[in-house]
Length: 156
View 1 (cartoon, rainbow, N blue to C red):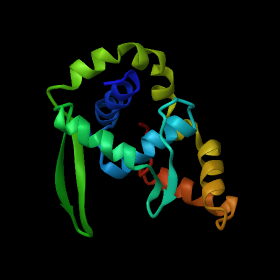
View 2: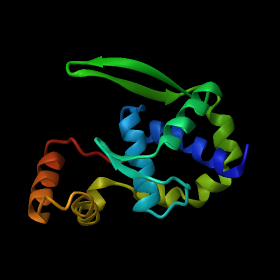
View 3: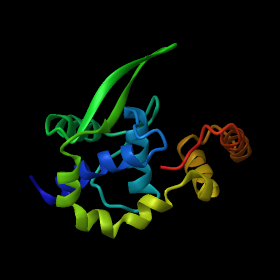
């Protein structure tokens, strides 16, 4: 396994653990990886394109499958009123991969900690406006503020 593979795999349990609920879904995982790479400059080697639910790279899902197979995280399907989703949580192998990638995780700790929605509104609004230019900046800002006030935007 390459160093980059270890680094990318180590991020999955870190992101799940750092979320207030101690788990994340697949869509959130995809977006967090995108934000880390695009907004915070963490070199992960993903090649994102825009998809129905936002940024997408099949390699993120491949890394998730590998992390599940290595017992780094476990993923369970959960039902919602409108369908289903996934709950990704740390598993028994998480401490080992985090130890193996400790240098990378320590080097980028500030980027993980600084990736907080409430401290990056202008940057996020700009990125959303760039990705979805059909929406005016004012429309994006209004939506951002509304979601933030309702507590629907939380820090990683």
